[in-house]
Each structure stands twice: as structure tokens, then as C-alpha cells.
Image (cartoon, rainbow, N blue to C red):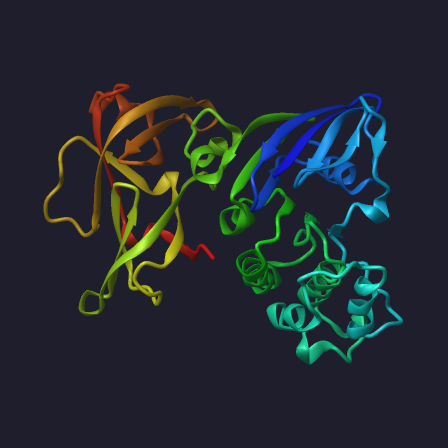
Length: 358
């Protein structure tokens, strides 16, 4: 459990942030200058806020009311920056051992870190010979070996190209699953939020716009996420059936069922699903003789104007899941869509992005 309540005047920019997040991965998301890195700095003890209280797993890190302020070295927080900040004169093994210095006894062992992050073949090498993704994996390993109660990652993939990001994201997912270590993850990339986060904190101009589960916030048409080109509903689902002859798998997300291209996971495996808002077609009658596999019945929960795109954002309740569709205002009018009225969401199986949930 993370409880953040902080206020700090930077002179011309006021940070005023309050949120509570359960265990898991908490993503701080927002544009540059929103205050994401300042929150991380306050948690790490690198910034002493003017006022507020910070608590991690029941431990009070700072409290302006009582004067409590745990020194940086005693907070037991692992910090990974955008640049790996490895010691160039040390090998990978030497950099990792640095994380063990003054570290208390803990459950995260050397072999576990080396295995989870795929570092065995890199131990004798020096940082200059590593790719950007490899350097970040070493930096994460060094932070883990300090036995943190919380891992802070401040845009760890921002300096990497798409290929290197794709390389390191599965390692971060492995850490989340295997270690169950709480993380605060700063990013402005929705792909990383979709892949990793459990809780999403939306920041803008030093304030919290919304805080909650990724699935709940991703489908809200009144939040800045919905105005992005990559706006999408995120659903937590499980694999219910495989149909090899049809090259399809069936997913269940709450009361919704979705056909997707054949998956390799075992039945019952948890997955995370992303359905782009621009890929959903709305209808009021079920079509016939059509190639798409998913016709999802639902109820219109809300309709929001997307003036910048001359579009409308339609929130759809579908069982225990919620979808978000971007359509034209003309489509809303022609279908006579109203809040509380029925609607069908038509979704191509090829448009559904499926990733492991852990």
C-alpha cells in the first residue's frame, strides 16, 4: 500500500498530489512537466516536500506534521532512472554487487535476479559493451539486490528505441509476477501502462486528475487518455477455449466474450486485452454475412464530444467490462444513440491486442 499526500512550491509550479494505491505496479502517467518525477523524488527522499505525508507498506517515510523524515539510505527504496547510471569501470557483476552493499538480509537473491533479468551471459562485460536495454536490466538488478520494499522506476525506457523497449518489457513483467514487489512506474507511454500497470495515476499540471484501476480509467471518455490517438479500452480476461481448426481462441472478460487469433497460453491463463477505440464499429442491429467475429451487446453509459477530431467518444457497458468507441457525431445521430440505450460493439478479432497478465 502506498499513500502519497504532498505539496511543494517550486516557484511558478505548485505540486499538490494525493493518492492511495494498493500493492502491484502503480503507473504515474501524464505529459512532461506534470510532476511525475517529483513524486518519485519525494518518495525516494531526494526532495523534501513543503508539506504532506508519505507512507509505504505501513512505514512513514515523511510527515510534515510530526517532523518525521527517514534518511534516503534507510528508506529501502530501489531507484532506477531513465539512464542506467552504471559504474563504467566495473563489470556487470561489480555493478550488481554494489546493490548488495549495506543491504539488509532479504528474499531477493543473486541467482534470482540474474535469472529473472537474463544477466548470466553479461556478468563479465562492462557497461560500454552493452545495449541500452541490457544496461537498464543491470540497473534494475542492482536496485533489486538492495532489497527494496518498493521499486521506483523513473521513465526507465524513455531513452530506448522501440526494439529495445520490446526487449525489456517482458523482463519487467517477469519481475512483477515472480517477486510481487510493489513498483511505482513513471511513463508517458500508454503501451507501458497497458503492459505492466495495475493502478493508474493520471497527473496534469501538478494535480491528480484520476486514480484507479487501468481498466476503469482507460474506458472513460472524459479523461485525457480518451483524446489520444492510441485511446483504447483495457480489459483483464482469461483464456476460456482454444479452437485450433479455426485458428481462434475465446476469451472471457467479465460477462463479455471475445474471439481472437489462436493463443499459446493454457486454458484459464490470465491475459490483458487492449481494444483501440478507433477499431470499434457501433450498430443497433446484428449484421449478417460479415467477416468480424465479435458482436458484443451493451448499453451506452456516456457520450462525450471529441471536438479536436470532430468525433464522439461512446462508453459502453458490456457485462462487467467497459468499452470505448470513437465514432463520428453523425454516426451517433443516425443510430439514435442515447445514454442507457442498447448498442452493439463490432470488433475484429485482429484488432484485439492480447498480452500476458503475469
